[in-house]
Image 1 (tube, rainbow, N blue to C red):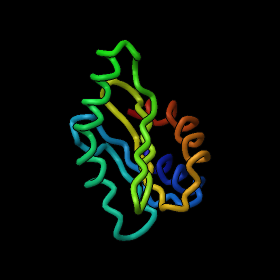
Image 2 (cartoon, helix red, strand yellow):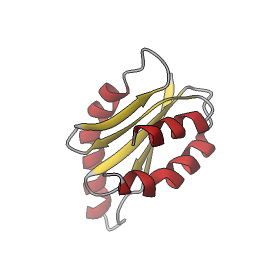
Image 3 (cartoon, one colour):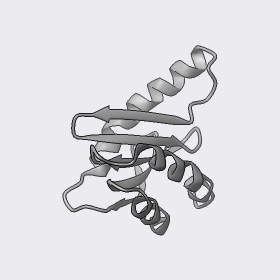
Length: 116
């Protein structure tokens, strides 16, 4: 699983790290490509907000969420929902490759889900 997360980070220009986490805020595995990146803290803080987004999408008959993107001043979070219990995040620098990141996450999702 860690190798898959490392592969994701290595394939995306500007990626700082990746994590697989439960919506309960507990990290399953992570890979920090750059020293000093608190990917677990970031993912943990957002995990409960993601739950609210999942509930809202279902309540509004939009169906299940597959992707969430958060663009901030100093980086971008690419989130891929793997199931009702787990998600993965890649943290990109401001100059990170957003499109490639989404594609790599989508491509790696089945492998990450199978390893749970």
